[in-house]
Image (cartoon, rainbow, N blue to C red; front, side):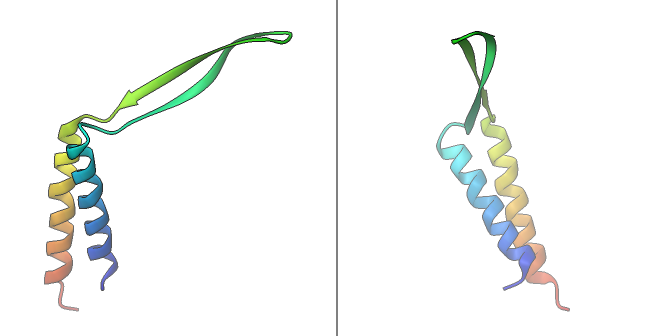
Length: 72
């Protein structure tokens, strides 16, 4: 199987997961204030919009299609 087809499948599957799970979210914890043994931290969360998942599905399918049509 060609690498472009494999990449297309992975991108399309990640896009489908993003659409079905109502957007992917990820976050980080970071230390805001540290005084001696006292530490205050904040959690930042970001969400990938659902439309990005739709674009990833279309892009992945296009990669699979172009990889299947390439006749080298």
